[in-house]
Image: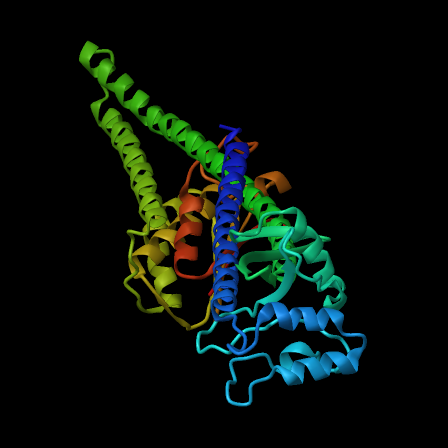
Length: 431
């Protein structure tokens, strides 16, 4: 039974971690698939839409560019091959960067109505043994690294590659003597995924630990509940067995003719039956309260008169013990279930009468009811457990009367406490 808290802690922690890991896995699969899909779309659009002016021979144009001696020659060659009527050809904006300083043959493609999340860049590299001039002069550092990698690897199919700490999706197609490579740099996206994974893993560990802690506390509470239930049933069996044993003993005595004082025997048996009936009734009441099947039928109750009505059946007990009962009752009205409130107050009064040495003092004020009785001695341990079911104190007495009084009080939304005061025990109910 004591291992429940550890089992539940491990179970909750594992379930939380597995759930979060599955969520992280799905997140990674979806995001990575979307990145690949969008990259592929951008690359395909670039490869499909790539074109130059029909009147321009690509080989001759690139040869001219390769033989250019300076920037002015390059610009002159480009302007000389631009078609004024055909906007699908090479444009200056496709060759010069924003500063007009770096020459690039990237993005020699048409504009297209098709949309993609990414925009693919392109590089041209001559086919082996084609005799075509090299365009390395026009490549920036990033493009040079891509070109160097592409010379050593097949790029005819779409693939994801890591080149010099950068992650690309790239694919190529052959145009005359050159291979056109379209690529999308997705390094930032994969860095973002990596950071999200790290943060999510840390969060998953923390949440898993918190879940394990919650499971441990829940298991601990379950262990305590099981222990309380076990003790409750053991104590209930013991309390019921006591009157049953007495009844059986008297019944056997009558059967064998040993007992002849039938009136006295009848009174004893009746008393034991009443004790057992009260115990069963209180057990059932607590069970109903805990299961939530005991509704409250509230109405206005005038407390001073109500308390005196509760005391009336106990006058015989008070007189038999020669107790002095002091009443200080102010007129005050509360909203309560009369039947349940009577049960709770009767239990408190019965306890006070049972253990009082000489005096009982009952005080009622708006919002507060106190019942005090003098006792010879009560330990702090007994006082701390006074509302526990079947708690056995130093005097050996057990029961659930005060436990039921507490349950009914809390069912009304009130509080009840017990404290040592003025050489006795004071029960205080606040509403």
